[in-house]
Image (cartoon, rainbow over all chains, first blue to last red; front, side):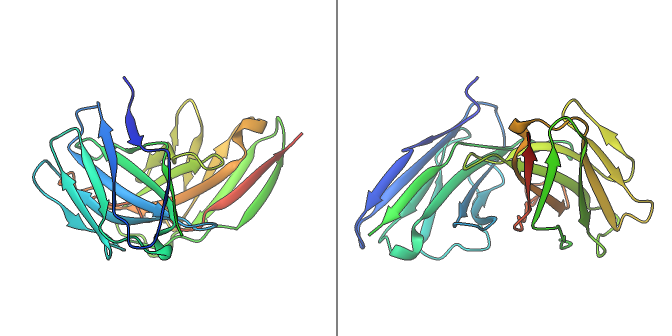
Length: 113
Length: 113
């Protein structure tokens, strides 16, 4: 049981390049989330998916797209990377019910030059 | 969701209890108090949550005041591995996927040998 996995762990992009961050969970959770964390700050929600086939914007969605590929996988795409998107990206998943909590992946450290 | 206020930093001697306060004076009746922590640059880790009653698990205790306007996370015997940023979050869990965590800057707890 790996929990939440993210790939890649590190990535360096040039301005204007595109890339997709991958996230997978093996806990059969319905909900999945993408956050970003800038230095010295708390996490901010980019997008979330309440269930397979649905996605919704969070606090900071501009410049990103997401795909809920199936129940296990939720990807985040940067179509044209900008230096302002330099950050650590965390994926999380949550089951159903009020006692369930979010489980986070190890993060992807992205630098945009 | 209700906003929370936490001290930016605290120190605690190793082996002593760490008491981390959180104010959430605008909390609504159906909102839970959650505590997460983030060790170095890892993904946040769930610690505990509660609605009205005090809660205890293998990691910590959560004391919520009777008016629910504040709470305290207690780590009974702090170790060096408890050095982390601790986030107090108030969130409504509907079970319908609209559950979201809003992270502030948290409290940086330093456990001193």
